[in-house]
Amino acid sequence: ELGGQPVLSAGEGREPFLTFEEDGARVAGHSGCNRFTGPASRDGARLRLGPLASTKMACTGGMLSRQELAFVRGLESVDE
Image (tube, rainbow, N blue to C red; front, side):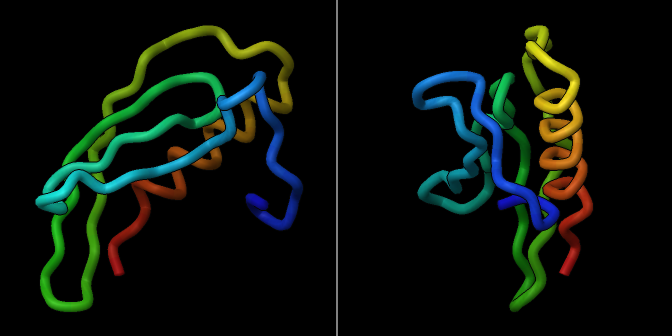
């Protein structure tokens, strides 16, 4: 669920996800259409992600594009 709405998929295995590398210094994932990666840092209980670099594949359908943008923006706004 993203923003209270069911997550759309661009196909099998292409649902949005986020993983942390073993050392916790980087994240990587898939935003529904594109892959992304970027730095992650933690200071005590505070987590910060980004900036994220992403591939630029075209998404099919406007709703999928909007979902992808919301997902990536949400990740980049993590600073808690």
